[in-house]
Amino acid sequence: MWCGAAFAALPMRAVAAEKTPANQPTILVLGDSLSAGYGLDAQVGWVSLLQSKLKAEGFPHRVANASISGDTTSGGLARLPAALDRNQPQIVLIELGGNDGLRGLPLKAMRENLSTLVDKARAGGAQVLLFEIMIPPNYGAAYTKGFSDSFKQVAEAKQVPLVPFFLLPLVGKDGAFQDDGIHPSAASQPLMLEAVWPRLEPLLKTLNP
Image 1 (cartoon, rainbow, N blue to C red):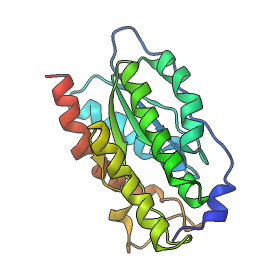
Image 2: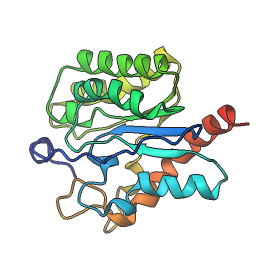
Image 3: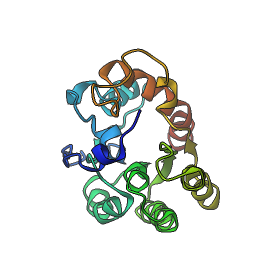
């Protein structure tokens, strides 16, 4: 389903974020191509659908998408301070790590980066939602298991909610992925949002009773 070499070679593409209007709560999404909507019109990606979902559910939040295709946890760390300063988010969604794993980067460093991302987001006044990521067994069973376990370990250590891997609902579905076999299709974006919402909604209700 996934090809590490192809994924690692993906071009970097940022989704611009506008300055947050005064007093409007913001959700910042810090991710890679899965959240940047690689290969899709920006309006059909799950992050754009989240904006519509928030409005429909009566939440006043603006969504700022700071996701870049090909990004790693270290890249996210470099970008997060400016994104926090610009958006002053109430909630930060961290969807990073896939490219670390597909490149076989050290798991200890990835866990440290994820932990620091959580710490920095909290220091900026935001609550955090961490995304679980899974990878194919390119580097053997031990690395693959250690990779997926890393997200649970960080979530438990930092006491943050964890979104189960949001591509699992796509497995086995016809047309779920684009022609590259890596990136979800437009038809899959609502399913990805459905996987995120059960973890995000309780946080929204807690912060905005």
